Image (cartoon, rainbow, N blue to C red; front, side, top):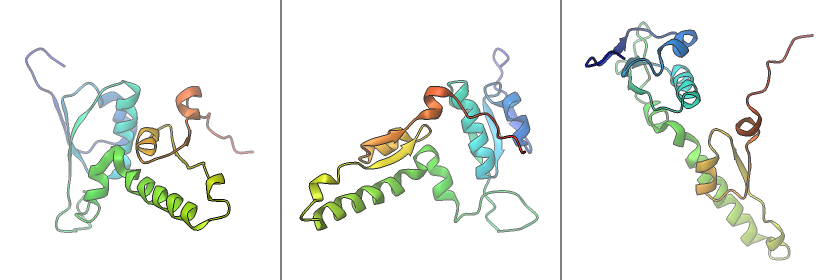
Length: 146
């Protein structure tokens, strides 16, 4: 950024240009899809920073306009915590099944959920095992078609 100037990216940001924008502007206006939001979050995580954005909402549901529908907004706005409600439901199923298994309920002791991108929320919701391969070894190389 330039000294004394807050830089905003205004307009349609293509996902293939995210690397050139994230971390170089103060605010991205505007993010109109969950796909783009995920790309921005991934790049920001690589750079270990938080990128401020504005979510674009298509309040009128017009197909000719981009933006997130009002119905999608709660899930999208949750961002990294997006899986947390599912983890909470899994935890409840885990507790319920243990309670119903009077003869071997105590042997059901592993609740595996979460991966590198959401393991903290999984642990907060009771995971006893998480898979964090990407965090340890990096992303998998792309699969080549035979």
